[in-house]
Image (cartoon, rainbow, N blue to C red):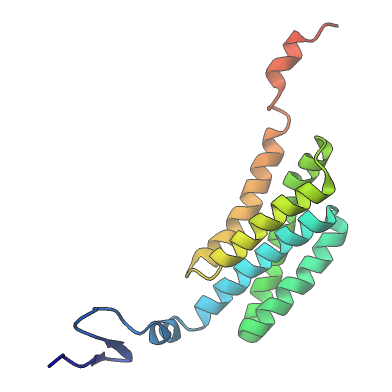
Length: 163
């Protein structure tokens, strides 16, 4: 006879598999999980819209609305605020990358496809616990780093130029 499920608090596990019921674990995470997902999805929406539009003045209000809408759907007002912040950080973080790519001769369609693919990956990663929060912080850090490195990237070639 096989042993039945063991109940510990609100988690259910079996002796055979040792796994717990993931729905119960998700319920224990509570609102913090969904707020993190909202922040990560907002950042992904900001990256996607910046890649599609290419102009931060247009992408930023769209990212605000998309992040706040996704966050409100997931966790009402606290999620809306997290999604709004994530959308702003995502759009501002992707701006130097998109602008630099277009300035170096990248096509709008190619840039939009590559940045859109990255945004889809970011959106999927937002569902991993805690990673949504990290995404909302890492995307602007990557954008700031790429902005800082733009001037030094070809600094060694300047000495070869003839006056």
